[in-house]
Length: 598
Ligand SMILES: [Zn+2]
Image 1 (cartoon, rainbow, N blue to C red):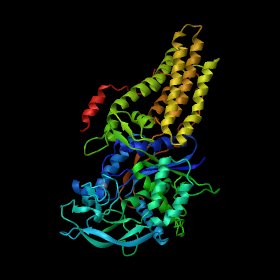
Image 2 (cartoon, helix red, strand yellow):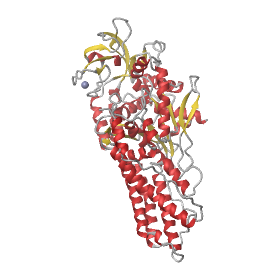
Image 3 (cartoon, helix red, strand yellow):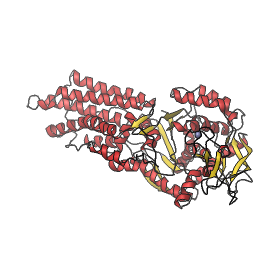
Image 4 (cartoon, rainbow, N blue to C red):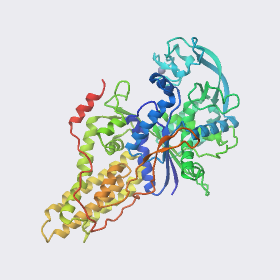
């Protein structure tokens, strides 16, 4: 048994999230966390909404609200969406809490004390008409690398390169179109070259990572440059140094604060648990010197933050970068065990785009379809290791052919036959070789499916579970218990159904990490009581440090099924089942395609 940190990418709170987002970070991290808990590990799954930075400021200005009001709005929307998907966060919080501010400032101070944060004079933009600083994202111009005409001051959305605003050709203000003036301004930089050796040593010792993630990360080390971690901006976390703390126009840059969220959310969780030191079990070695495990889940556009920048912050704060140093008051902090990055999901052959309406938001999806239908699609056909296309036709096909006609039909016909003929789970009397063979196959799934989930091969894992579902369906068709209705053959009918029901119970456990909502239903159809698959709740909490309250996702996940077969008890009453999954009419494909913009 280990302490396992499941660190899930922080969704940005400038709008609702679409299914491409949750297929990258949301569902895979929940499947993994549920499986690890069921296997007896002590899992801490944390995340929250990422709420600072210029895009929030720009969007708030456009909507005529404050950045905090905008962040409040979308924090709540995102919390509700992730709740609807059944994602079992121990804590899903946000970056505008007093706790997060304090932890970010502690890391900044520690890195600064160890010499990994250096001040540099650089060029900053101001508006000639107002004299106010013009933040990077308020500036656009032509990308010097690819020629794209609407590149932003901090990044080109066309070629993806990070930019500085003074590099733009024909720079202009997005507020009033005027040409910004560039003046000298002082900023803090993370001295990334001072981590080249320690990062290289760490990356060389990684095992089991997806090869593309490791290769990409290793290549980044060849060209490490100091990276600005403060910005000319009012919306963000103040810089915790004398002479800077009270300046209203300088803030810590959003990417620096957001990656620290994994740590601050763990600390917030511990403070709320009644044991403020409890977070350390997931961030340091135990008494035997064995490190806790930390798995980070994200889309591939965020690899650099998790395999280079976040490890650098952890090394620098712990005094373990190339320049050495002393650990800060939080102690020596663990680096990630694995960076689990997924690829991109596209929509009907196109990139998701909110502005072009090539999108379906989580909320709209859940209004029309069940959460487990989406979870199934993402696990079975999502962008685990290749860019993958979501099509409505494939979604409907998988729902109808695999969930409804495969797994749902096995559950439905077995339980209804047993309910009708016995009114209860029949005894597994005098089992034959074929009965024992099926039960043994399904039991072996606890090893094969579990190992695949543990290695982040969820597509293969659910494929293996569904192969066993097909085996059980074939068993039922071969044995044809419906033909054994006369008095003499009824005991044999009972044994076949008892075998099928035991297989269903075990298969249901194997599918629980993927399909928690329907797993709870199947558990109850088999006469089970209590919680089988624990679910998160939305709880309104006070800020621990006196700020405004906010909703969090949390839950008690110590209850529920374990990763092991549980023998059914003969005589447990059964009722005629309601269908577990909904069959979709093929006409929904046309309807959904009409909703998409062209
Ligand atoms: Zn470009």
